[in-house]
Image (cartoon, rainbow over all chains, first blue to last red; front, side):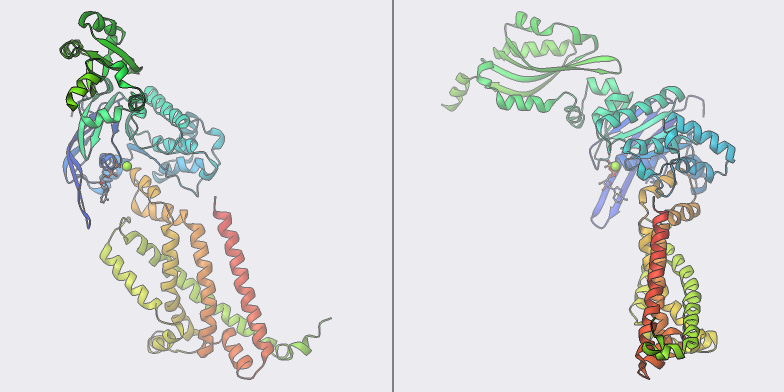
Length: 361
Length: 225
Ligand SMILES: Nc1ncnc2c1ncn2[C@@H]1O[C@H](COP(=O)(O)OP(=O)(O)O)[C@@H](O)[C@H]1O
Ligand SMILES: [Mg+2]
């Protein structure tokens, strides 16, 4: 294989679990790849198949069919013995850290090196360097039970990287941590990615985590890839329902539902109207669309809620509006927005009092 | 000044016999203990690694081994001794005395130890083993350096419980002709109404159990971080 082969490539993976309770198709035709230096987020709700997917990257779970390529080599057909060598080149961290309780921080990090029968001096040098990178030099002789969650995860990261793997797999590594500690762990991963070109495959159920450090994302839904692409592609133009749902937290959709429950719609809606979610992408986020709509189409627009997220350095504006007026004009206004490449999602259609009265009679 | 001869006349008279019996008990428990700890730990590991989701998953083997262990566990020890007489004779040449007692003790205790060992080994987090597998570490290395090492405090506790049970077994084996403190207490304390012999024997056993338990707790605590 040439130099340009992706560091990790999954091709058409399938995995079915057969249990007494029935069969579960955990993976269905999964094809995902990561280039060197990518931080690839794989996001999905609990039970979507994320762990099964990440465990098939190092063959802890053998897929029923499909192939896994690591740096261009098909590892699907390898024997257990050869797989062990491949696994030494793929680090992995977990939600519950999985440290050895009976060993000190130093010995935990040294563990894979001792297995590989490295010399004392090499072990001491490498463990020392890793301790410095994860900023735990002063905890070298502590036991895991004496550490905080964030410190435990740092030890796990050091242990996973001490053999200098090209890829780090992270299965919900921040899910047991508080938001601040999560940020510091994500910051560490970002640093490792930036300084050493480490490729990270990051499994999570939180869009926020993906937003913070990933450059690529794949959305997993019931064992299938619902959509994938660069972070910008997926965030600025979510296509599948599941992605939109997962992004709703980012755009604070729950605020809108709260507002809708508590405002008197009659007062802001005249004629035909709708509650609409607009997504302004990139430089469009700066344009003065609202004033333009009011002027050009003679309709009314009330701004309910808005925010701007920076995705991969691009601004992504989200705006919830109540739009109302002549039904035809409203339709034209929305078409205009669509033609300007603004994302338009109608959350709720509304009719004013008179129209509703007509409906009753 | 306690007048020992007044309160414990028989003990004072037969203290040499008592010491000899104590020695016999220690030998019985020591030898059968060493043998059965080895077998029990081995069986415990076999049970854990062959269980569902284990390193060497083999459900059929696991279930057969488990059932066999349960069969042996359900036989009361006194009856096991009787059942084993022909087999014991065949293997060690006699079914009485110290030599005759050790084999039934081993057979009696191994199923118990393997279950307590199994429990101790089960305490090791599956995630830790998964992490080691993800590092590309071989299964035998995982068994020795993770499964066993991580559960050492539990293993020590299991060993202590097993030794304490063995002390009880040794008294029973003694009562049916095995020698040791049990037979001493039965021969004199029970058969000849020498109450002071029974009392002192019980006190010695109590002391042995407590020393063992204390030592075990201490070591286990030292090992727990
Ligand atoms: N070893 C297994 N045996 C049977 N079913 C399993 C096994 N592992 C996972 N599953 C099932 O496969 C589905 C996906 O699980 P998983 O990959 O753990 O999801 P996630 O990590 O996204 O929560 C779930 O329905 C789960 O119950
Ligand atoms: Mg999972």
